[in-house]
Length: 508
Image: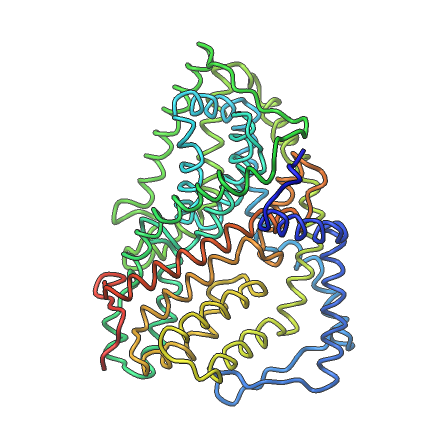
């Protein structure tokens, strides 16, 4: 039972949870959202709402009417493609094939028990948040891998599984931009920033590099790990109270057979890793990109099957050693059982996919982004007030448009030159954007993986809805935003480069 004598913060979060959970089931809610977009597109189209594209001169953005004959045709003919093309669907299902073997063979359970019995308990939360932050190296795989494992790990420790899920989700999503290494996001955003900077100063833009935010992001990893740990242990888990859902994850000592299985799985993991490394490390590696590039390469575009293999082979080896897998029929059965557990998510994904597709097709998201950019231009703010307002507006827009590159493609051509004229470098403007883009991910129902996180949470509590997840993740979003902005201000005060050859201030 939750303590009734709770502070203002807890009571506020309880209100958010209560209101949010009074909403319909997430499947129904996404269906309602989709229907609302249809109606809104008809109304806004009828009144002639339009806006000029900020980057394509002469192009007028108009709301596409889904209530028109053409719109109705689109909805009927694209329904299947919207579902099968829903970005998280394939990623989740393919990844879960590998995880399913690792889980049902007993490998994940044994590995977690070995971890729990060897790592100090006070470091478990920090390790989970840190792992989530670093998972951006594997693009979106952290949502599918670490989020459910966080819940399992906490349950095995006798802690609230939703707290473990929240810690992992916070690291993966709210800390998405931070990393000790460069990820695929760096060149993705950096290319757009260079193009925007070239409008004012082509020579400066040509000298920019994709590691332009690297120093700041390295420091952010440690800051977010500490802050995420404190928020989990001091705010989120105490608010959740004692877990009484009835699902337990036992943490018993590792048997001699399991130790052999873990050793075999470890060797299999090392061999598999070495084999995959041969595809990317050598200059002749077939998964390298053009001119031997690693970041922009087929390897990073194929991380989902790589993760499938990295889980499947060690899981299979563990199963053979421990006899949980004896024949190919056992493998097929375990894979089938895994997919059977994904039924609720598949239904949810269908409704979510239609809503996201309708929102994009009507151009409502694009118009919202452009309107937000125009609002910032009209504020008349300069210096720190402009930067803070920019971060706030970008964070709000992020609630409606999940793609970091899609938003930046709209905002960079407007704000990079504007900030350069005010004396701030393009690299710094991109950094401010990345902070805003990360911190509100965890409270946006439109974020593509929001649905799968709810599905994972419902394993432990069938009553979990959008309200529960938002109220649980809101402390991370708020605290991460505040601390990250303070860190940015401190960085500005001391004038430290935010990346290799990437100053804060711009001098023509």
